Length: 254
Ligand code: PEP
Image (cartoon, rainbow, N blue to C red):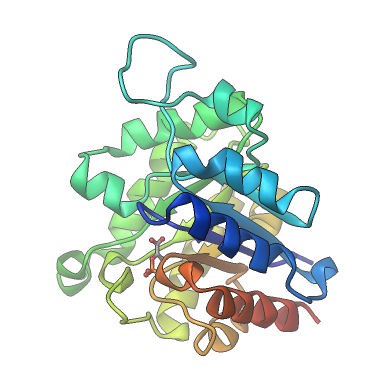
């Protein structure tokens, strides 16, 4: 009932020519597109190029970050209305690299989440524990807090038209994928948190797994009940890997 979604996070990679080549290869992939949603999140200056390249193919595009305000004196930042003008569908908020290297707090991530929604963008909010937090037995508490920061007082159905990505920090870019069981356990916990207040939204919410997912590991991960696709870093920079993951998503939907 939840169509899988696979989104590529290109991070700070890609030049103009490579970006167009990669986007074109993905958009032209022979896939059963009725069974998967796909998105590409390039660096800001490449968004328009990627949009022009994928055109009206089934591939959507988005941004890796945004500012919480809709404009103003924030040098170097990008606002939601501009992302909307560029035709973005998605925006990633709260990626662990933003939390770690740019000090983004749960509150700031929540503000970006709502800015995305206010501007008609689908926020993909990233949550996930570090290795130290997992070793200390705090993984669930950390993820709970990150989700709760967006849920707030629970008076609003905030996760409707939103996506959550569970990305254990120790698995991002390390080649160490979470086991399907570890990931499923956390995805189920996240879904239950949302379902507690909003059963329909919780049931339909797409929860992506992110953390060194490759074409080879995708089928087993996506076979889990509560894993609805992937947020893909490194493997999204290689057309054949990313298309392989899209194929695994299609297969998981059949
Ligand atoms: C990411 O950056 O969101 C990610 C999952 O990276 P990787 O796939 O490289 O671990």
